[in-house]
Structures are given as structure tokens and as C-alpha cells.
Amino acid sequence: MTEPLLSHETIVSFIAEIFSRRGAESYLGEAVTIAQHMLQSAMLAEEAGADDELIAAALLHDIGHYTGEFDDGYIEQGIDNMHDEAGARVLEGFFPPRVVACVRLHVAAKRYLCATDPSYFAKLTNASRATLKLQGGPMSSAEVAQFRSDPYYDAAVRVRQWDEGGKDPGRSAPSFDYYVPLLQRVIDRHMTGRGTRVVS
Image (cartoon, rainbow, N blue to C red):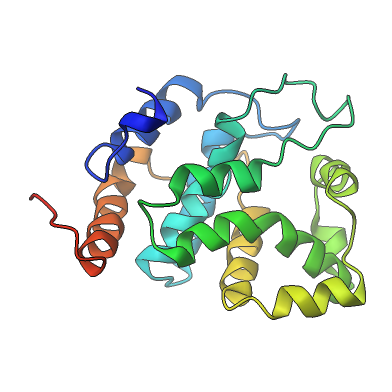
């Protein structure tokens, strides 16, 4: 299935297929797979009482890692694969702006937290510190002000905090199938709000 064939009725199954096919891949040197990481992030959001959109954003924040064309060794090559932008492009048009914005901003949120919270950098794993360098390091004062001007910055910061917590090899999380109804609810509400008829 290629992106031009996607619709609001097929996007969830498209993402599910990606999780099934590639979810067991290593996650940038972390002790969890990339699917474990994303599922743990969603679980943390749910445990925090987040709404459906934020849970969806936490689950899908790293979907851009699956859509790039870079080798597994891109970090060692000094390349930022821009997975935040790639992921947002995959979801845009199907998911609400808040979900898309959280995906697009979750890397910026890491840079923001490193600039504004002196204790946050200590929470980063070695892999996350390595990618931080590629992503521009902590924000400057001007970048912090610009980031705070985004209407979704606070939501993106919450997603980022769950992102950082979702790297525990000893923690189990629900499967992707558990979140399928939630994802479809988020999509259907968004499409209905846009005046698009949703076939049940």
C-alpha cells in the first residue's frame, strides 16, 4: 500500500501493517524495540489520563522513523532523518491538527525542555543525547520564544515527556491492536468535523 492510496478508512490498517512488519527493529541503540517504545509512550499517556488525541500522538510520535529512506547507521553518519517532519506528513489529512503538531514538534520539545529545565538533560538516554546533537542541541532564547508561540507547544511537551519515559525494557504495554479503536475514533471525529462523511 502506498501513500496516495490511503484514506481515512485505510490509514489505521496501513500503520498497523508497519508496526507488524517493522516494529521489532532496534530503536536507535535503546534497550527496547521501536514498537515497544511507541506503545509504552501511549500507555504512559493513557495512565496520565490524557485524552484520545494525546494518546494517539504519543503512540504515533515516532512513525516517521518508518517512512524515511536512511540506513540504520544514519546517526553514526551524522544525519538527522527528520523523522518528526516525515511522521507529520504521513498523518496530516487524516488526524486532527493537534495530533499532527505533537508529532511534528516532539523533537523541538526535547530541545525546548533541555533549554528550560536544568534537570531534563539528565533524564535523556545516551542515544537521545546523541540525537540531540544532530537535532540542534538545546534551544536558544529566541527559539524558546518561537516554540512557545505555537498553540500546540504545551501538548507537544507532554508527549515528549511520555516519549522519554517509554524506554523501559522491563515494562509491558498493550499491543497495537488495543489502540486501533482509539485511533479510528480520533480519525472519524476529525473527518466528521471537516464535513467528510464517515462510513461506519
